[in-house]
Image (cartoon, rainbow, N blue to C red):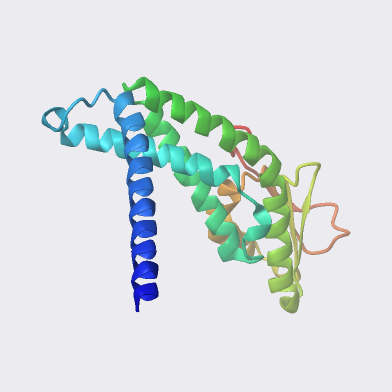
Length: 212
């Protein structure tokens, strides 16, 4: 019985230590963030400062996510590709919001996130375009449609199908996929009825560069 009491006391002490350590770490982190915003007291803390603090934390956390970003951790399907696109769109929005802030610490975080997302996008987007082409090719093979990406950075995507002998089918594919073509920053889309076609329909896209 005495032994059980001792064990219980030890467990309680350990829990208290862990709790205190967690609170101490949280205090340090909050103190560091608060210092950036010159928040000296509860009386000086307002809703505007809370929004700034939230933006700072979002910038910091998103930068952390990008630090460990790996394209192979996402599903090899359209949903996986869209998840990556949405992550980087969030980065773009945060960078714009942070750059417009009048708080130096937020601007610095925005600059760091901007550089990191651009560096990653330059490497990842060619792979993502190629993955997109492969996913579509796999899905559309059963309909006798052949899809591939071309160019050193996979900035061109080519569709081959007898369906594209009709302009309305070309227009439908282009309209349906226009948004993701721009999200993936393709520069050119080609529609052919045969791989031997010397004449074909193509669209030049004024999409952003991967480094933007």
